[in-house]
Length: 112
Length: 112
Image (tube, rainbow over all chains, first blue to last red; front, side, top):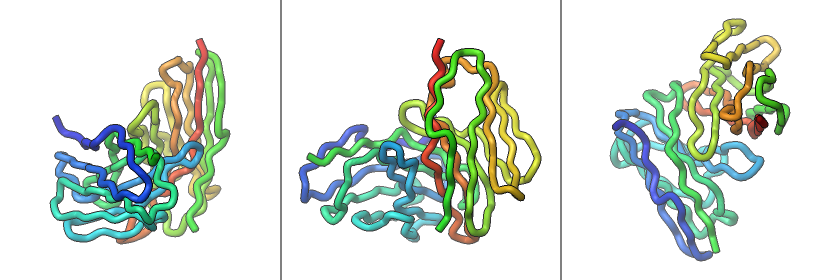
């Protein structure tokens, strides 16, 4: 079954802790993306990667970091520098940089 | 700064009604406009439009793009309760660093 998986589904974190969200795809897509969704805000781009070992900042990259060591994987770390990390995080992938993006099921992060 | 504005932000209709959702945009180097449906978690792809004036259709859903006036509409005829969702409009822009900019979405509620 091809698709995009994100884990965990729900994540709770104490203030001051870093946390890493997983995103894996077996669609053989080159490009991968991380978005954040807040109520009434739509989706905002955090980071994206068009190719392995390369990534670019999106519109709201501060307080986040990523890596792209493998084509299938694009983990997102939410650092303690992110001032308001409670949100729904969505990972997406596309065949190439200009193609339709397909989304994973999301991770809901709550900071206590 | 790229901007995508959707209207209305929310809409309540009865089953069988026809609805029109709007999306206007201001972006640099427009490439494409996409519509997604988000029911609970992952947005699912509906349409991608790149050419002006050509309608895309899938069952009761259809969409058209006007590149001169910088907007798109999504029509849903004979609505059903299963159409209840957030409908997201996204505009693709940029050259080598192509990215999607999302609107805030339209929350559609279809009552029986």
